[in-house]
Length: 97
Image (cartoon, helix red, strand yellow):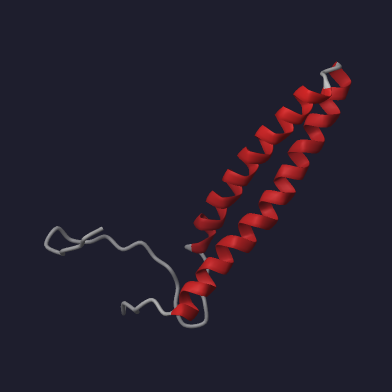
């Protein structure tokens, strides 16, 4: 395995994968969660304010889950000439992270 230095183009590819996957899945998940909460709130007679708050909360949860999934999926993706991997460092390796 050859370690490559991060270039602007490589960082941009990784960033874009995280952003678009997180955004698309977050919007779909948040929309679905909001729809389901709206339907069930109407069925049981909750006020619009409670339905709105529940939808907001579930939208945030869906967005967080989507962003975690986007980062997770990054490790399965191969780009044109690189892929992102977690590499175990030996104790003898010096790192400032």
